[in-house]
Length: 292
Ligand code: GUN
Image (cartoon, rainbow, N blue to C red; front, side, top):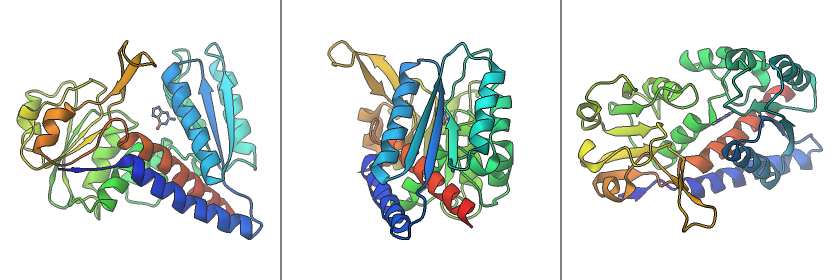
């Protein structure tokens, strides 16, 4: 079993990005500038956005955090998005999801300028991704592709089973793994809450990507020997013995499943850090696109 070390790989990527930023500085160019809008006070969302801003500092990017109360109206949020679209200093920005109930997520995603949409959630970019055109790829799926590539995990002709069809992970992942090229050329099954006898499907999988948010869901009896397992789950499970009062737990019963795996991501330290590194990579791309 080999661990797909997302923490280390993300560090490598951040060093590569920092080198590019230094080159920009040496030439007297403006460095990439990422902005993030966060609505409300959800602890997990605040932590994720905080990590994104911290990562910007690490690689030498400019960053702007826009905090808005959970009571804002859709109109107010759309106005803020327009401001960021029109602000020439900002190369790319994200609106952290989920959003409060009174706000229509689709309207929000449609309002982001596709050229600044470093999350890759705008339909124009999502469509380009599905059509193999060059675009921003959503950060979590992009991070998974990068891990598979850097560890040389064979995907061609393999059966990839994706668990969960969210717009952020499962859906784009199912498209990307079936695309031409590497990592891709996989035969993909996308499973979800209406899938019957899921264990009959997962047992056939060469590669399993779980993005479900159900702690320890994937058990050893659901996978075959030699399987590659990518665990996107990050659920906070209450744990009094921990100083934070919770532990981050993945979708995979790591202890048992790892014994049957050829490659597996840990939680934490797997996909999570890769997501942040790839958001930075998309922001660097956005800066380069705007310069050219
Ligand atoms: N919420 C959970 N993951 C993400 C992400 O990748 N981008 C945004 N904007 N919100 C998220």
